[in-house]
Figure 1: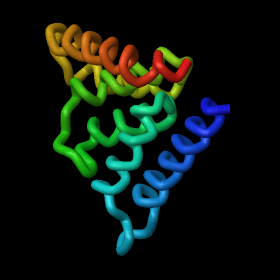
Figure 2 (figure 1 turned 180 degrees about the vertical axis):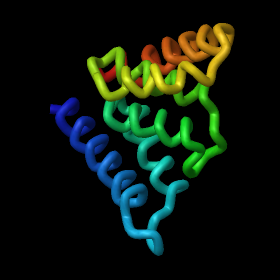
Figure 3 (figure 1 turned 45 degrees about the horizontal axis):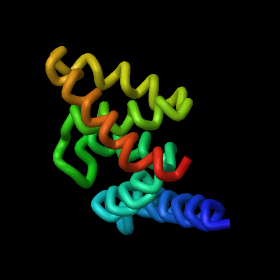
Length: 119
């Protein structure tokens, strides 16, 4: 029963992120979108993890950071997200091999912290 509540709240948080991300120009707020995507991503919600990676890759609401972008997309891809896997390949061209290694370490840490507890 608790898992259902957590899944539902993470989906709601993701939807709030989408609302701020996708709204019209006057009400769009990327910082709020990142805030809500982060909440959902940290509860193991793979769509939010992918979207958060995209926000970091594009520098929307956060400073652009390809290492963090790659890491969040990898966490989502490791949960069977084809979209995140494609995004990782696009991000990878912006990274040096040492940065990819750093992103993989970070992704492993994120996975252990934010996904494993919800499985």
